[in-house]
Image 1 (spheres, rainbow, N blue to C red):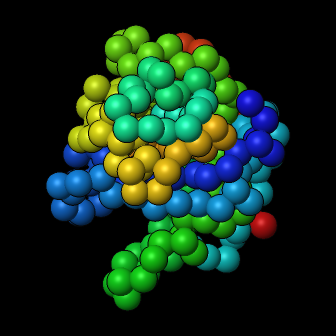
Image 2 (tube, rainbow, N blue to C red):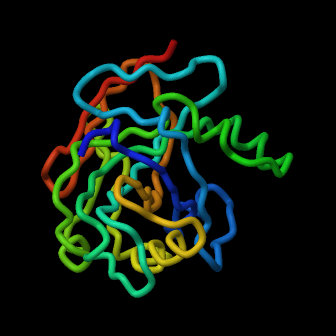
Length: 210
């Protein structure tokens, strides 16, 4: 999979109960989705990733990301629809997002800025049940700051693909960020990040604020 071939980027918000609580949000009763533009995509390939320094705090949100391998049709399973996966970051301008929430405005300014969709190396999807046996994590400066497992999702992967497919459609090249666990926090200049699937590193980068 090449980043240039990505079509649509869907993100599921508040899909881990402890994360919803840490940001003082209600736990949703149906999937809560937003999107990012493809211009937000950047691969975590060991390089420096530049982020804005003039819009308040930028928070990391680590997520398991699904790559869609074919067109969605009713009744299709996750294992049939998804061909690859990775671990990535839904970066968020938290101060901007807080202002947007107060105004009841969409989140695009807080979620869709350049380099806000960080993706690791894509690997073959092992299937839903196999994926529940591995944790994903974010290491920041050699310290683990987030740890998650899709078995703790409020809305499981099947519910997510059905909801997204029925409301918006899904096709080859689409991505779904499935939600972040608790432990989100701000990034600092020169932070070194490592995205892990079990013990396997799928991506790394160094944060640069300008």
